[in-house]
Image 1 (tube, rainbow, N blue to C red):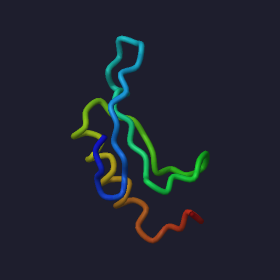
Image 2: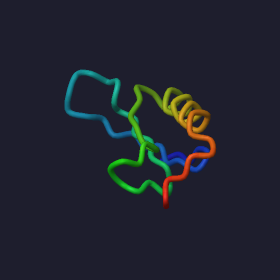
Image 3: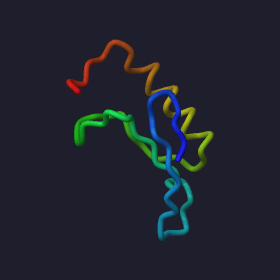
Amino acid sequence: MADYRGYDITFDQKPMADRSHDWNWEHEEYDGPGDERCGTAETEEQAKLDIDEQIDNTRGKSYGC
């Protein structure tokens, strides 16, 4: 597991041929459905890029955590 900017990134190979969802990322304070601070990616590097984009798009947004 990797920690990146307050997000946990884990490798979880799914039982399907499509490898685009093998890396999961989730904010350390993820609050369940409705909290958009989670996702999947094809690679660890892509997960980091997705996290960067998520942070850029949600600056100043409150999640009620």
